[in-house]
Length: 241
Ligand SMILES: *C/C=C(C)/C=C/C=C(C)/C=C/C1=C(C)CCCC1(C)C
Image (cartoon, protein in one colour):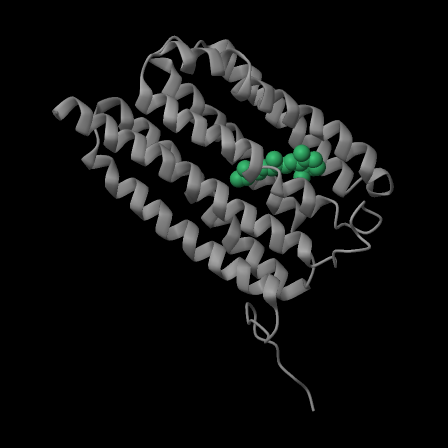
């Protein structure tokens, strides 16, 4: 008997597929939320919320494709994944710049962070695809880009600007975002190490890579946006008080 598999049909037990569906919907819902809430915040925060919504919007569209790709091929949609990241991760750097702009952030800081993130992603992509046999080496090279961003927000000029702002609301939000970079972003290298021949491939089955990436994206993209949103709302309440 011939089984007809309809496009984009989930099979029972396809946990990777589940997280792709949940991811698509969560990113869409978050996008609607950020865009609609733009009317409820003051001037400069509108841009920050717009960027938050763009991040989840770009992810929602890619998740739509990735979900389809996974369901049809049963393999990781690596290209869509990295195209998404190369757009959304620099936009997360833009978020840092926007909240620090009023306290003296320069374009140089933004470009530096964008450079680190693009370096991290291009080398990570090479390790996952072209040079899979040397994925550990490329993973290590990619980590240098991650370390650059980590340094900026924990010790570098971004940290200094936040420290010198004398604005407790900004500092609290900045520190939360810095924890996202530390803990939230550290989720990704764990997923990367599940690729065949990767450092954790003995412990983690290959499917766990996409599950881990999907969880990481939901936490980081939506969580980051919510931190920005609460900063915008509490800044408004402060001014009203
Ligand atoms: C919304 C997407 C985000 C926040 C993606 C972040 C991705 C990373 C922090 C990826 C990092 C990697 C390493 C640090 C080493 C191994 C290769 C990567 C690209 C998975």
